[in-house]
Length: 141
Image 1 (cartoon, helix red, strand yellow):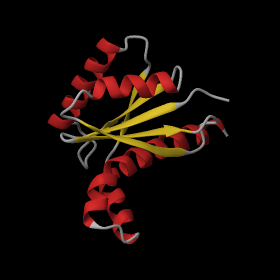
Image 2: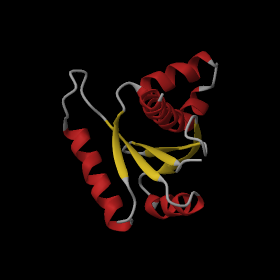
Image 3: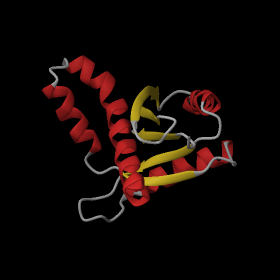
């Protein structure tokens, strides 16, 4: 059994949240938080539910791999999280194309436009986390 990982796909309006299974092999969508509300309190409830998780934060990079203003916004978000939860281990993970892939998957699953809007951030967080878990598990093999 390993420590759980919680992933955040942070947008300007919504924050997708996913969590790993206890063995660290699979990601599961967990929630969509409002970025405009008191999302840190909601995050606190999630963190307490999973003990001492690691927090994975999606870092948007440009297609050439460089960081732009959105990446700096994520670094500021991480600083805000660390102020509230100083003991929490955080890590950034490249989130390029996760939202696009999530939108395509929901479209292919014939999810309505309204349904896609509600689920895309959670699915993107799940894809982000699964990518991280797959990478970590390949290095452990």
